Length: 171
Image (cartoon, rainbow, N blue to C red; front, side, top):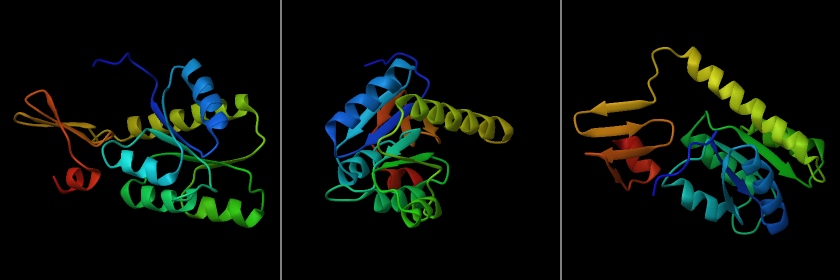
């Protein structure tokens, strides 16, 4: 299935369906592709196949909380921007989230417009960092093999190859 060109893929990870739906709707209106996950474990399972371009992440969730998912993401990729979106307003929680590798932090209740603007800013910074790195080509071609170093996907003779992120990194 060929998908329309979008501004980037955002994963929204929150156990509250209304928040996932509303954030997803707002980001889709701005041209982003959005995937929603009810907890960190579901998101992590999906991220093994393909990392998103940006993650909006709640802290308090069942199965795997946002702090653990953030740790795992940072162990896999230093460049995927992470925005914590949480009801925890303690300075300790904000500092811990940022120290674990989050790029931004918004407390519930939050302004949807502010969240969308923060996402845009993070994508702009990501684009600037990529364009500043002249020697980094995100698509590597080795004969009939094509690797997308940004999305952690592979194609052999034009056909997608199903790899986990770990398998991709080993390749």
